[in-house]
Length: 371
Image (tube, rainbow, N blue to C red; front, side):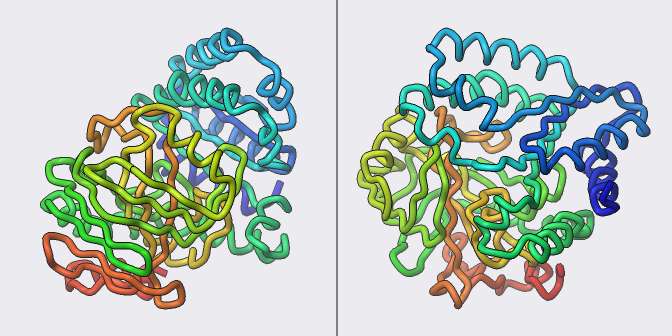
């Protein structure tokens, strides 16, 4: 067993989900490469006095179900897995799929049925009621998406995932406090000039308790408050397709026009999944000092230092603006100088410029103070 997996598993069990003796933990493993970390998690959970339930899953196994099942089968699948999720205290997912495109040739209708069964019926329980943490595994498929050699990418991965998240957590507190007291947010940059309110929504820090790697503070726009245009400069994988240079024109909270480099028809179908898919359900600021470029893996990309994401779809209960949707599509824009720069203002006050915090109480979140 790789010693780095032993260290990471212990961190996940003791810090991320804080598993207590007698608590049940659902460990989901995707991909054969991730089995080593899965074994380490079962061992760490057992040694902590917990009761592990393990489930091996991968797109190459679920593929024929997703391609061929009917709507009632998807509903029954969701209800079965929902009962398992309801019966545990914590959930950890290790995602090391060999090919994340193995569902890409499923019909749009079946992908929507699967998304509703998976998200609305199963993982809404996880998000609302359970202790949980989700992470990827540094297999060759992930390294390929990052356009890196496998071995140095794995070294980078473990460096990022075993960051001192307790230290980061303390440094995040001033940003949480500032966002909780903010009304108007203005974001400007190449192709972007958008404003919205986060008044009364609140803010939450992501400090290694939910995702690994971690490093963001999120809130949510008041549902009908966003106006302007936003252009995302990081590519995004969603619903089995790759999109680049996404651009949204927004009026009174609703995405009225959308364009991209990629499948325009599929983009429109995603945004037409339901009424809430054209409204935003999250606004977040990324600040992990070790993640500096996109790798088409949203668990990493949404934490990029100097980035933000404005997410169409479902809002979290912790920062709820009332928007409901089967979609939750985190799309990232990077504002460092290398990526064109940009500014974020809170109530007219410049808070971050070119990806670096500029107000005294937030300087501790700049990379030189976190790395």
